[in-house]
Amino acid sequence: MKIVTVIGARPQFIKAAVVSRLLKKQSGVEELLVHTGQHYDDNMSEVFFRELEIPAPAFHLGIGSGPHGQQTGRMLEAIEKVLVETKPDRVLVYGDTNSTLAGALAAVKLHIPIAHVEAGLRSFNRRMPEEINRIVTDHVSEWLFAPTDAAAANLRAEGRPEEAIHLVGDVMYDAAIDAGRRTGNEILEKLKLKPKSYLLTTIHRAENTDDPVRLHNILKAFHALNKEWQVVLPLHPRTRALLQKSPALANLAECLRVLEPVGYLDMVALEKNARLIATDSGGVQKEAFFQRVPCVTLRDETEWVELVELGWNRVVPPSSVAGILAAVKEALHDSQAKTPPSDLYGGGKAGAAIVSVLASANKPG
Image 1 (cartoon, one colour):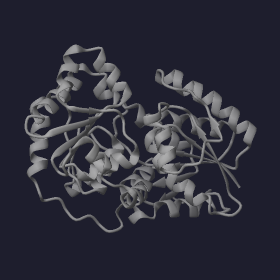
Image 2 (image 1 turned 90 degrees about the vertical axis):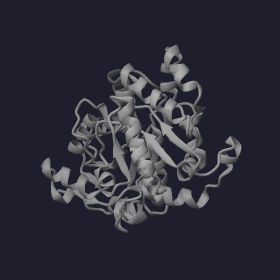
Image 3 (image 1 turned 180 degrees about the vertical axis):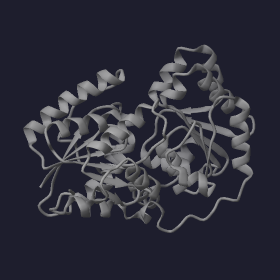
Image 4 (image 1 turned 120 degrees about the vertical axis):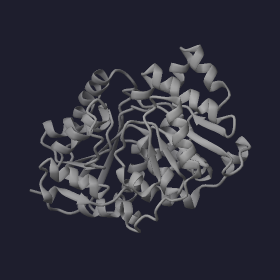
């Protein structure tokens, strides 16, 4: 059996590392990695392949950045050529990026069965490009690997067949367990940071970076927090480019500890030693929980509703500086987060569950 896996962004590299490692151990299974090039500089791409020991992609498409339609269209054209050439039995996609959507569309047009890891997540905000990518991918996929009960329930509510839905847990948790065994504190020593003495922040979503008011509120809140806590900000290249165009925003960021994007193992070290994490990233929300660090999510909603219910995450729209500061203060001083169920997110066995289904001969339906 031949599987083509389509990846292109940091979170997908982390997830694919778990599943690809296990697929490699399966007799009779050949996996070909296709890297779209959605994340293309070393700090956002190649470092993950090195650290996570992901085999070199069989195909590197080099698409790069661009408007959504242009980027997705170029990916779709290039992936289709790969699929026609390689004739896989299945196509495997992850998450909710344009790489995910392009891989799924290319496969379904060629009648190749699709498996979607992280299926069923919903923000119920169709203004988010990621939401459209999720919905379309789930509705053309034959294997739907749901990370949570809520995700599986969403798929059922949308009429997806029960035999296609597999509640497996979250491979990001598998990855976090592995990274926790391998990471040290070298980056803290390099940056001269003491554990629990700083707040870790990330910001990259278009809904925040493309809205001058929201981005200003976030940076002004970080600026205020920096008076009491060292605020560490690994800066996404896209966000950095926006700051360079605005002297006012750049001035707000000046006092922060702004870093180039860091590799996965260094990011895990920064996460587990932070006092609090403030982010608009879906993956970092979960990584905060995996390290049992309180999190404030700078968005209007989250797909990971169980973390809010358990008290490990607070969602605050960055519509005001005061709102952000109040949420951070509350998270810093609240110790009432609930103990999670031991099997939450698959208990570290999501990758094995996914591979078990993929390696089976039977197709759903």
